[in-house]
Image: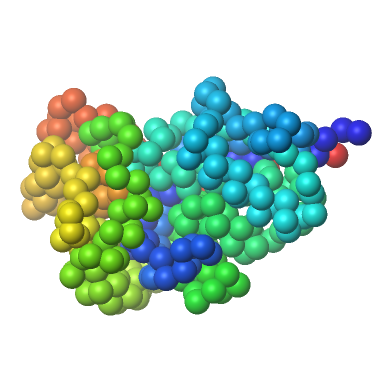
Length: 328
């Protein structure tokens, strides 16, 4: 019998209004709703085959290396969820390759688990609509719920598994994201551990959660009004507030490098010169710059000039999950 197999790919996304913290960790139900931009050219491609795997365990290969330890356990837990829902019992073989540096603050897990959710559910014979796929992807990595969709995406926090899902947001703005990579190394503290620490020890976290709800409403209003300046202002403030809460944790969660601060000052100076640029930073030292699509190449050139040694790339809005191949 030919084993069930499927291949799917998904792009990374960058949150403009952040997700940081969970009210229900086992189901990955977040404390706040979030808004993100899916980026072109950041795809992770994953093939899943329920072919018996490596005997009593799943066989997982990520970027050419066999996964072990925490990485293998995380993928296998997700596949267990697919097996439980589909009725399959077989172990799986998973091969995944990514253009996004792993664990470097560039949302690699979002693309990875969105692609895994699409490939595994298709291989298991599950017929999921986009909302159901978003809910499934969320169980692997919260931000993966957003990578199911392209361009601008809202993840509704909800209150339980059924009500926590992402959906696309109509957007007429000409958007681009400049990615300024200062380090592609592995994070010193995982996002999951950092979230728990921030929620449990930071005196600033409750205030950020409250402000984030207002930020989301303001951001969505800016999108409806096609007001890029307002959207950028709110996105930058939301990110800085999140990192302030993280830094106030006990002990502090400090992802920034000295050059992170340098880039923030550079962006502020460029804005004062009239360039449409606003910063956002995820769980890592790298800075992403929201800008107008028509200005993106000029902005990138200025950043390369003013931040020597950094890797600076231009990303435009990208598409959502794509199932590229499926075997009967």
